[in-house]
Length: 342
Image 1: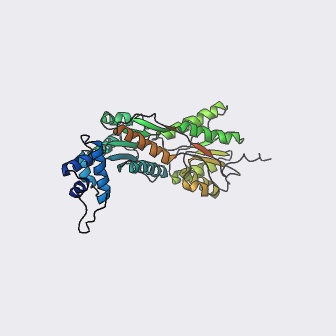
Image 2: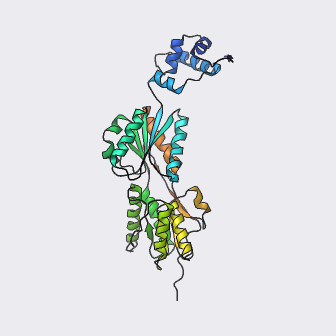
Image 3: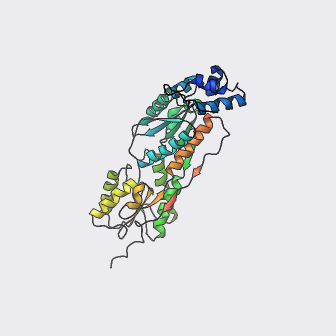
């Protein structure tokens, strides 16, 4: 089918109808997804759309079809690498499926009503499905029946909303803690993430479980809030405890702060203190020393969450929510404990 050239204006539905040999009403029905069109006619119209270079404005398509083809994403407002990496995965699948993405940020430590408000805003903006990147414990109660009317997918341990895409946070903590114990350290200290997050609590609980399985009484938890600053404060506390030889830190960004504080105190990593953390962000391999960490498949989480919610929107055959695996990446920040001083 020859391509028509109209240098003085953009192609429109009349051009498509003329090229396909059908009425403009038929073109409109095909573009809007109306099922009452013969398959061979629909194929001819779609071929004409390509041939004349017609591009339907997204707003017009929404009005014509009654669909927005938009996904909503709820995040906790932060500069965390993990959130942005997951959103990249959501956006990649959305683009492949012909969906746009709109987001709503919720302030850190927000009340349940803030999440409900974000959900409502995204619905008003036309989101056909929503991905929640906020693994906090009260979401099921906060959102009520909203997830029944709008397909909803959470990630990691998002409180049981819709269909969750999970990374086993307990397995992450077990891998990190056992790695240090297997190197010969008598105990492992822990710098926790923010207790507002379920994943932080799951890691802390499993760290305790592993130590008790090995006959070790867990030392006091040193609290953090995911930021390098909180890691630095925790590192100063650790540096003041001479017996500490191994630390499991709940995020790479906090680990950078821990290592800085230890270095300033004259305690070398890993010669004096071994450090293992979680996430494997891009900078982890370039820290000094390179960071031993448990890699989380962030983009895969986003891709899986977007796939799940689009399947729900399109009423495709449901697939089990994937259980994505984390992986221990051993680098230079961990080693056997130093020899006892004479």
